[in-house]
Amino acid sequence: MRIAAFALLLFACQNQEAPPPNLGDFDGSGPISPNNGGGEGGGDGSASEGGVVAAASNPKGIFVANGFVYYTNFASGGSDGRVSVVAASGGTPTDLATGLTGPAAIAVSASTVYFTLDPVAGTGGLSSVPTTGGNVTTIQSGVTGATGIAVDATNVYWTNENSGVLVYFVPLAGGTPKQILDFGGALSPTGLVIATTDVYVPTDGAQAAVLAGTTSGSTNLAPLDAQTTIMYADVAVSGATVYATVDDVSPAGAIVSFPRTGGPAKTIVSGLSHPQRLAIDGTNLYFTDPTGGNVWIVDLTQSTPSAALVASGLTLPLPITVADALYVGAADAIVRIAKH
Image 1: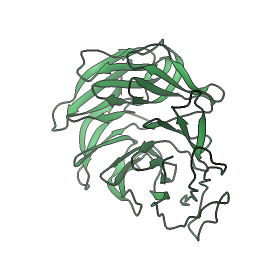
Image 2 (image 1 turned 30 degrees about the vertical axis):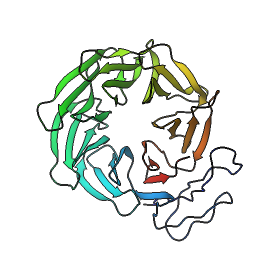
Image 3 (image 1 turned 90 degrees about the horizontal axis):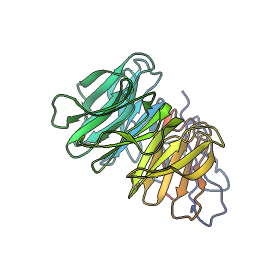
């Protein structure tokens, strides 16, 4: 299988005439020629400045902790899935769990990796495995819509779907899973974010909305704005604002925002084509564009924000997270991209 490698050109996102790096496919047979008149890369998978961190197979989730990148290999959505880890500096990945059916979202707490199973067919659930590998523990099975996962200091949370959206939790120390939140209707969860004690769930469907509640369950899930037929693909939270991607073809694709306490959506950037996963770092909002093979940045300090290209030439980039750099899961690789 061809493994993508990339020539990343370092450039400032502001006041810079050079185009963004083109991260095209590479067969590993020799050095990459410089792209767009900029720097050069190699086929060794080095990620010190940017490039391929590790090979992957259709990753759906990515999490960076303690200098390591943990990710799910959804693969075909059948029993060929894996959970893997690799040093953030790049190298050969280690499979922590194999033979999984549809591993999707992922989160890490201390010495445990939590991951959801959301297969193409049938039901999934929530499982865990030690960060060093070993036996997989099933925490909950028979779950539909296990698309989102999050951890806080004491619990791990995940989404479920049953005539609407459910949120379950279990203590990190172990115990029996319990439902804390629900919201009925013609909608399905697409992700999950915990911000302090607030819970946010983007949804898809005829009655979709970004739902908000609290981890205590004292405030149940409720729409931040009016429900509508749409797909909110992901959310990110900063300060008093919730940002969401509206996954639709241009010109209907957009980045929108809501007050954390609820209220009408405000369009931040419009005219996008299928924006998907979000990551936020200070005032910079990053999102992936699987159909175009791109990663974009939005500077939220601009009076009229616009999307600027950070990297292109990726194959179906989907999950993204921010740590010391951007880490993106493409169809066949985990890629590291310098922050801008």
